[in-house]
Image (cartoon, rainbow, N blue to C red; front, side, top):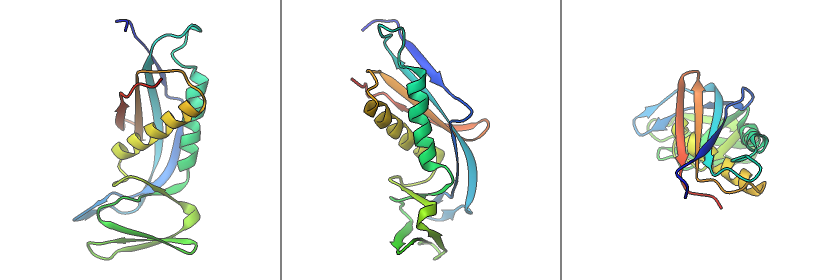
Length: 167
């Protein structure tokens, strides 16, 4: 492998989603609240014969699809260690085990993610995995490393690095 490397960065204004969530772990639960999340992507790889690591447009489209899948939903961590989450009819019921606090939400307003907490850290890992799947599905060429940052607000972000090479 060459000592020379390239990376591309995509951080467009429209790569965002607005969502409600709350952090919960044994002994602590935030109030339900929302964020205007913003997603950025950095991909490192070899320069292809066309002069690209990956086409910016391909990365933007994949990231936009993932953002759209979360936009204007309440994010719930399906693998929570302290919440009981049940789908009943057209609703999702969430009960915090510590004190029995209960939320009932329309099923169409909820996205259940395979995470333990709806933190920016866990969201960045989930979003990175989905972007990876989207890019592979679109036929993207190999890359060596991907970083995905999810910010809850300006100046406050979590980054996940996927160093598993593709291709």
